[in-house]
Length: 366
Image 1 (cartoon, one colour):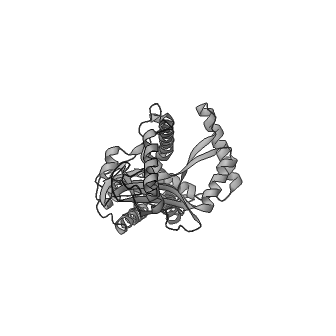
Image 2: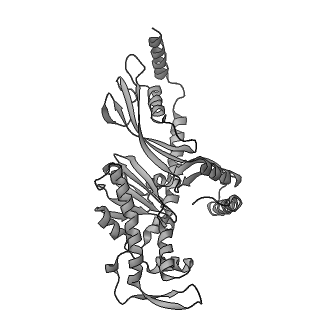
Image 3: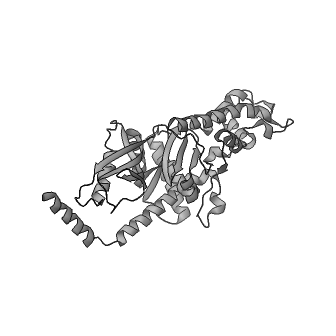
């Protein structure tokens, strides 16, 4: 959600980091920060440049120029780029290229997935984390981090839809050909399920949350007719018995609304076919009974729960859809550190690249 009290947020961050330091036995000075919420926007864009060298060999400079060209569309002053993810490169209209460096061609194009955030909200979050004594290495759109923890390479390649059901918003990302093809945020999530129960059953929000977690279900056929539960009322502290099927009548329409909104957004952006590797549900809100089965009906494909992978020693602690984003941020940081280490191990001086650059420069002068 949005930060509405900076001081309270800073205090909470300090407390959380101190507790984490005690548990991990290390000092925390830097962090990868997950971002989500209704202010996140995503768009697919295209860039094109002419290859500069006369021998038509594509250089790193050409790649950077085409990436810059794809991002050159004027962003509103209140937006900033969080991620610029290449989906594929094209060389003289030949597509499906992941790395064009060293290829020959006259024209280089790129299809890019841009994720942007609100400048003010991003700066507010950055300020809060910094004031808590932590340097932000990178802000990461949460579904992208979650994907690192729960998706397999085969799923990314075949095509998979990742849904992250939070409290206030639901984030989603569609993968295909190993890259992000589309992503988005919807203002419908687990908190809305709870609010629906509180309103219809006339019970306090905290009680509605307990009822949802303990007895909630999205499909009536999964509930026996004789099942009932005691529901506290808002006033007077009295309770009344409510058939469990009544919970289904409240929760199912909201779940259908959420999934249909995502499906309509995918179709609107040209993704009409069901992802071949199915749908993966993550987030604390994903554990509602019947939600998986309902998703299978609406998306017309297989659905599974996402659980953190590749975390030896922590399996029992984090083996839940609610831990996927946290685990994904850890994995994102590990991969980022591995990439930095690889770059440091490379020779900072490349004769081949230097000679190629000099040759290109002299050819341009001739």
